[in-house]
Image (cartoon, rainbow, N blue to C red; front, top):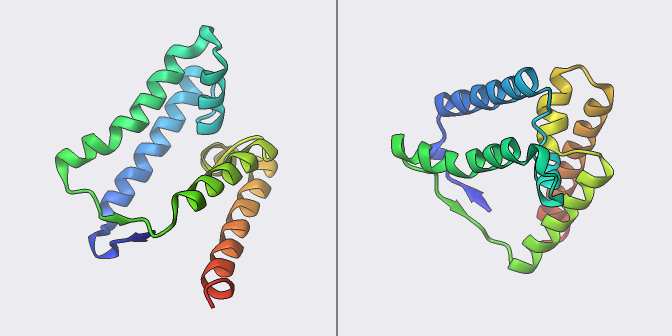
Length: 144
């Protein structure tokens, strides 16, 4: 996957980060829930009907947001250079990791760290380290 860095603007990144932070803050203040995407989707798929409304609204908001963003500016070009098999395996590994870590990067990295959770700090460091090692291995050890 490659990203068109010429299209990167710090302003849109700042606005996006602020929007994620505000959404996470509103969810915890208004609903007492952590904005961890794997937990939100996982509970929605389990069919817990008592709180399915806000979970579905949150998920729809995530899916609609790029289309709204597209109204104001063009979306960056994304090119995926991996096979479908690699993408499926990577997705399964991420899912497995979120189960072992009891959450994902949004739950631990955005919400947990902001609450000062040591467990979330360790999980986020682990996520990042695993990502660094994976990129190094794929780009420098396996390509030769």
